[in-house]
Image (cartoon, rainbow, N blue to C red; front, side, top):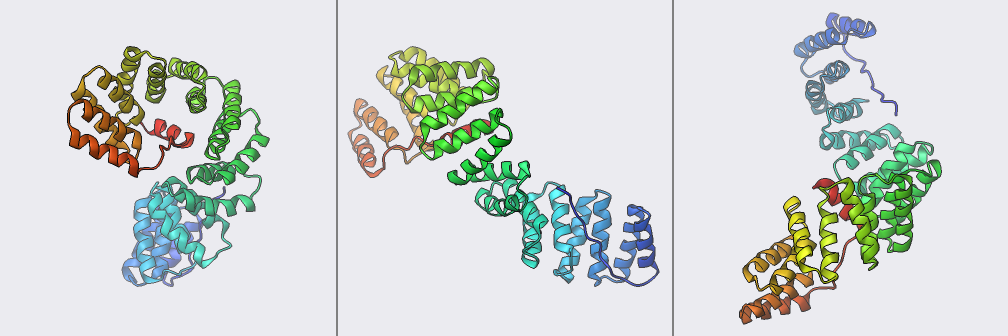
Length: 365
């Protein structure tokens, strides 16, 4: 995307004339010094401050450029081009939160400004405001239908905002452009999983693994979908494949531990779960399973620590309260046990969560 900057026509006087001449010669540092002189002589001249900001930005001195733009905006926030240029300076120095306000103002002044809308959408995306990003990137992608990068950002925004139908449409378009993209098959699978179309999601992850068997998280994602579908043998195979590529994938290890527990191998399961939690202390499933095993082994205090950690991570999940209730019963703590069992009745059915959230969590940890 071409990035436009707008010059400001302004000031009279020798310094202003000199600054304009220096700009024409491409001597932006010298031009900035001349505008600094104008602004010092005329501190209420918004256009002088804006022009100073522009030449500072041209020398990549974005921090001081932003300072100049802010002074200009305090004097005349509607100066043509000011808000967009200010937003660009914030954007280029990676202050995306700071870019949002100026870009919004630029768009409010001219709703047809596609550059302002696109950069606003990208700033929302970069700050994790995915619903807002999707709103603006949808308009931008419609206006520039061949721009694959815009479609990719829109698809990811829709996926993260749980707008799965929107994400699915965008990923279908991306796959038409590149049918062998493992990454696109994976995120399309996440969108399908969000729509509860798990068999189709599995097919997409299988296609991703076929396209690139070494793609990060491809085997974990496929394994999770198999696990979710109660196809535990297939799931274990995929989790092991992920660990062969990335031994530090804590979630793959945790789900393998869960499968071993389901298969009646508590000792092997415990070893996997303990290793997983040493790599990532936020794996609720692993702590619940550890609590189950340690309770059966009558290691009550260790079991309690594991289950309380699981409860802290997701207090609204009823399974951990049920396990705590059983543990308190075994420990002879009747009152505590009754409280936990009462809590179970208050909660909804356990929500296993969608694949997009789990894969995002693995990237963060």
